[in-house]
Length: 98
Image 1 (spheres, rainbow, N blue to C red):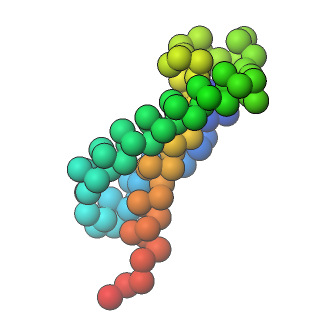
Image 2 (image 1 turned 120 degrees about the vertical axis):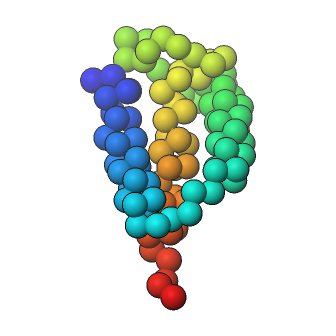
């Protein structure tokens, strides 16, 4: 099983929760999301490269796509993406109704 196959259900669930939140009337806050996206991706690149570079984590080359940003495989960026999709959506879905 590759890392993309592991990531796929989490990304699908996050996208589904986001779609439900938008369908239920969550306002599309595009600018804050774009800013958060870039901040999270930059931080992920920095810290993933650090932990891989220091030898704390390693990846089986047969299980990754082979695309890397520095030392970090592209698959590692799916985790913050899923969080960026799901957390704001859950915030709107679970907010107290007025």
